[in-house]
Image (cartoon, rainbow, N blue to C red; front, side):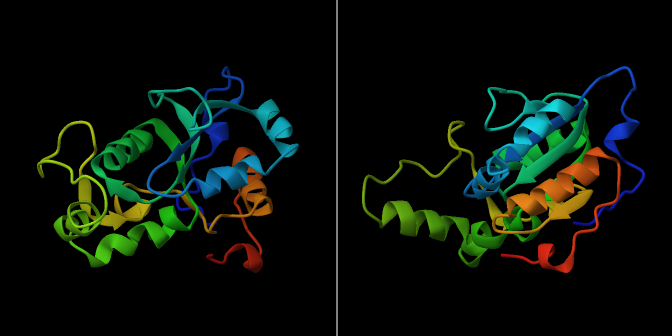
Length: 195
């Protein structure tokens, strides 16, 4: 994991506020990074003593809040909803972490980039099994796909990267505890690999 903007730390938040405000977000991916996060097991209790989880797919928050200290973003940017959420996250977070290989590189989610969106939809829905969706225009219910799946840093500035598919709990713990302590994260070489 690399810090891009060393001047930003959660400790720069107003001293009168208590715990670090932590968010996690899930864009285009399998949620494996969040499953690995939950595999922190008893360390989650220690983490809960230091942070307030203000937004996450594992919490019941519908709107991304303002004034977040650290946001872990899993998944690539694949559709217009992801793009809007990524921009909202950046506007409201002091530190944004690209969390897992899909966020860092596009990974599996970007395999569709070899096909044009129309060709993809035709092969999957119009020529595949089941009922074909009607119309080709955005319907306001299903988010329109972007022409290409993008890693997070190609859409918004990212402060740090945690590779892995998914990142193992030890890697997540090393990164999160360093960030919460306002320390630079220096992962050993075996924790810097993709996959």
